[in-house]
Each structure stands twice: as C-alpha cells, then as structure tokens.
Amino acid sequence: MASSDEPLLPTRGGSPLLAPRTPNMREAYVKRLGYVPLAFQRMMDFVSLTPRKMDRAKAHGHEAHSFAHHQPAEATGMSPSLIPSPGSIRGSIFNLAGATLGAGALSLPYAVAVSGVTFAIAQLVVAALLTVYTIRLLIRAGDITKLKSYEDLALYCFGKKVEVFVELNILVFCFGISVAYLVTLGDIITPLGSLVLGDSSFFAQRWVLMTIFCFAIMLPLSLLKDVSSLQFSSMLGVFSIIFLVFAVAIRSMMAIHEDGLAPDLQWVLNTTSGPNFMLSVPIVMFAFTCQVNVFSIYTELQRPCIRRMNKVVDRATTVSVLIYLIIGLVAYLAFGSSLTDPSKKGNILLSFPLSDTLIAVSRAALTFTVAVAFPLNIFPCRFTLDMMFFAAAKDSLVRHVAVTVSLVLAALILAIFCPSINVVFGIIGGTCSSIVCFCFPAAFIIKLEPGPLLGPNKIGPVILFVGAIVMGAVGTGVTVWSNFYH
Image 1: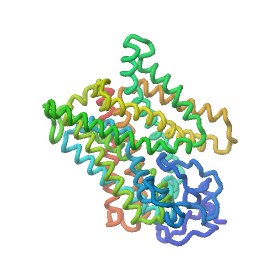
Image 2 (image 1 turned 120 degrees about the vertical axis):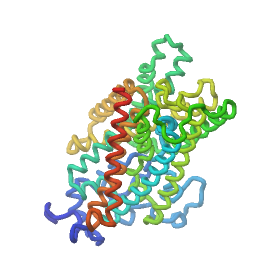
Image 3 (image 1 turned 30 degrees about the horizontal axis):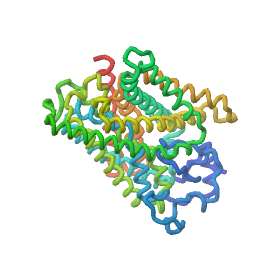
Image 4 (image 1 turned 45 degrees about the vertical axis):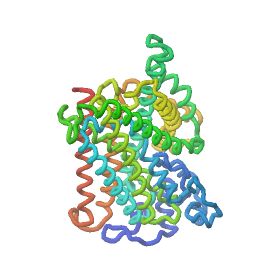
C-alpha cells in the first residue's frame, strides 16, 4: 500500500500520466479519499440533482457491471422510444438542459431590463460560450487524471482544504436555490391568497401562506431518504419552464400587437441607473450553472467519449440560451422598464394579471415544480452536513429529522425576509456560480497542464479565472449595494 506522502496518481514533471489504474493505486486513492469515488462505482440514474456524493458509501460492484448504461440500446434489447433511453445522447441533452434551466428564467426579463438589449444579448451569448468552454476544461481535466467527480478533482489538484471549500460552495449554492424556490413560491401564491381570502385576512399574508405551504408539502417531501422517489421532477421541471416561456412569449407578443413596443426601451446599454446595469451579470451566471452536473452525465453516457459529450454540451447549451433569449427579450420588448419596478420583485409572472388563464396554468405548473424540486436541493445540503460532521456516526432518524427541519426552517426564514428572487440569484450567481462554474474549471487546467502560466495551454484558463473573479465580485457588490444600501 502506498504511503500517505505518495501522489494519488503517478506523476512526471508535475503532470499526471495517462497510465491505467492498478488495484493498489485504486485502494490507496479510496483510502485517502475516504469514500468510493464516482469513477469506481455505478452512477445514479437521476442526474439532474446538483451532483453530490449521495451513494458513495455503497460498495461498488464488479467493473463489468459498474456502468450499465455504457452500452448501445441495441445491446440491451431496448427498442427506440419517444422517451430517451438512459445514457443516450438525447437523454443526456435533456438531463444537462434540465440541470441548466430552472427558476432563474423568471429573472431573465429583469436582467434584460436593467442591462439593455445589446448588453443582455452579449452576456447570454458569452455566458453560453463560456459554459461550453468550461465544460470542455472539466472533461479535459478528468481525462488527464482519470477522475470523474468535481470534488475529486479539487482534492487531487489542491488538497483537502480546497475540496472542503468546493463542498461549502456547492452547499451554499443548493441552499440558495432552496431559498429562491421559496421566494418564487411566495410571489406566486400571495396574490392568489389575497384574491381568495381578501387582503385583510391573516391567512392571506405572504409569510403565513409560505409557512403553511412549506410545512404542509415541502418539509414532508424533504424528509424522504430516497431521492429516486422524486426522479421525474426534472422532466416536469423542464416542461414547466418550456411552458412558462411559451406562455410569457404568447402574452408578451399579444401585448406588443395591441399596444406596440414599450416606449422606454434601452437598445444598447442601460445607464439610467448608474452601475445597476451590472445587476444582470450574476443573474446570467446563475442561469448557466450546470458544471457540477457534468461528470454525472458524462459517466452515464452510452459509449462515453469526449466527442459524444461535446455533442451533448453544445446542443443542451444551445437549447438553454435560446429559451433564455426568448423569455428575456420578448418580455422586455412588451413591458420595458416596468420590469425593474420593486413591486415586480424581478419575477416576470408578477407582470401579468391573476385572471390570465394561460399564465395561471404556468403558475400552477411552476408551483408544483418548485414544491417537488425544493427537496432535491435540501437532499445534497443534508448529505454534505452529514459527511462533514457525522461521517463516523451511525444513521439516526432523530438526526435526519433535526437536520432536515433546520435546513427547511432556515431557508423559509431567509425567504420571508428576502426582498425578491433577483437578489438571491444575484448573490449566489456572483459568488458560488462564478467560483464553481468558471474559476475552478480554469484552475484545474492551470494546475494540470504542463508549460508556463502564460503559455498556449494555460493562457485561456488564466484569462477566464481572472475575469470570473472580477465579474463575480463586481456583480455581487452592485447587487448588495443596489438592494440594501441604495
């Protein structure tokens, strides 16, 4: 068995060799890592979760059975179906798009309104291109090290402290999404409560409705131990977002047809509120957060290779950016600067009347999606806390309930006092998204590739690393200043 001072993988001149793993190396790595990494075990079928180490404590089977989906559909006897088979290119595109699209689409019209049309389009296109680039960097890093986990790469490249830092960022990111889902829920159900119960009713107050809905539906779902119980929520979530985009686009075009374009459009850069045009940057960063899901999808891919994964990434990113452009631009052309009104809270749904049937259906679909997707972000938060503080303890129902209730209650309290979803998206996008999605993929390649820091292999990642830090810091600073001090 290798000593604790030996490298996790054989190296030559600081760069890992592409030599095959041996049993002794595997045993040494597993012992050092403290769990069975994703590269050595069967992957979860449900990949739309922010990828966490949910099943790493399970013993891995024989190598031949480790990746059941790494065979073509003909070999498994499966006939072609409208529903993509697990690990197919179509299925992987759907999963990656599902990991990218989400409630962040609700704030895209607000992002266009504060930044201006040209600047917004440029941001979305650049963010899409950088998403493709960073995923290629991650796949390259995995190819160099033969590792298939984001956290494993962080541990291998930079040690345990940085791996813990990555864990904390993903924890904060998942928890932030949970808060955003509750804020979205409050924005949707509060007008409905006022309509049904009257504005003066105690039960029509926003915090009361959020609390009732949270503890009646979201908490019981979050207490489930088996994440596969909610495996269809990703599919429902994608369909609900697509329907939302369709509904918003239809109603916005109808408004344009009746009243014409909004009179106060900013076609290039919106400088009417000073540096507030930078509020859109972290929102766009948040909207393209999917990098932590890449290895789960790549490992499940049938006949996994970089060429096939590139097809998945290119097509899924294209679908996502088109959806974002449609909902952002069409809604802005119809409603203009009214989208930045504080009463709209950065949520496009609040620009439509409750009596609108099409929008009401999209509200209902989104409410269901939020209710079911909420626990999918509580699960990894709970697992991370268990691994950080209770890794050596036996499984405990009391601890399971206590940690879950604490997480849900903390998310609820923050959501009640949070002014709008664009604040959540802005802060999380400028911090966790910029670090995990843009900084670390660049840092992995800077560490792993040979050559000088400004050499041809590293100059791109260096520019990306510095640019992500600057843009994330500026975007977060403007978000905090604009919403809490201005």
